[in-house]
Length: 73
Image (cartoon, rainbow, N blue to C red; front, side, top):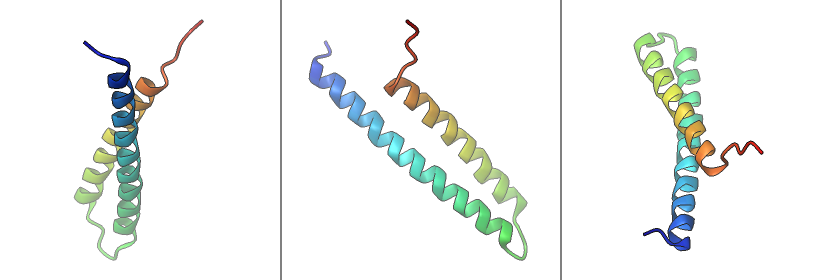
């Protein structure tokens, strides 16, 4: 049985995860740019980072939807 405190804890947990994912997303962006600037760019590594970044963007969007659902009146 979920109480009011459980709901608050879930929102706090989602907020914490959201912050962590956004930070990782920014870090990946910086890493991708650094690899592109290098003398020999590692295309496979860049592709892997971009794939991870897309996954993070989708997860961020999903969590934001859970925190702030679209309520059509």
